[in-house]
Length: 193
Image (tube, rainbow, N blue to C red; front, top):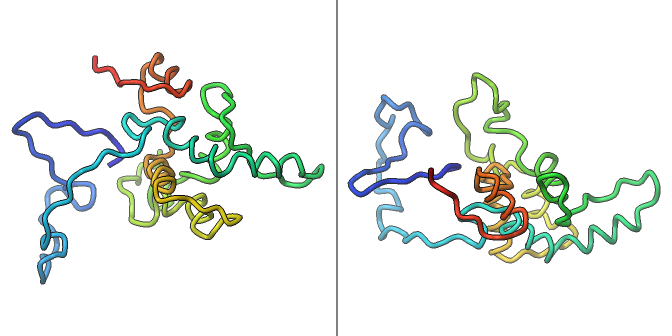
């Protein structure tokens, strides 16, 4: 899910409505017992630093600093006039965002919201597997194909996938003070008002 969900004791959550019409039962029942029902449920584990609350500076920028910034900076310096240089991926603050975020979010990350439809389209109502988030992003495809032999660990790839699947957010809080903390790379607890 791309949003936070909270339940109080006694409430139950089900996944109905996003993936099928709300008023209908599933169209067909499985013929065999699904594999997921043949084992004990997986226990949730905490995500990497920067995933709760979401924070691009804590989740994504460390991967870029470790694997991308120096090479991109070198290629930018070596670029001849008129030659296309790679995007800057450093954490210089431009307005309310890092340079890396500005250079990745729109052109390489998340640019369409499900089935190629515009987010503001009245026809928009759901996303489709493989046509949203990481699997539909240019960045994910580029890295999976071995972009300049960059080798990401499972943790580093997970961090980028979380970002891409979370609609390429920068901030995980809405209040100004929390956003300023996140911009500085600090932990910002969301406030409940």
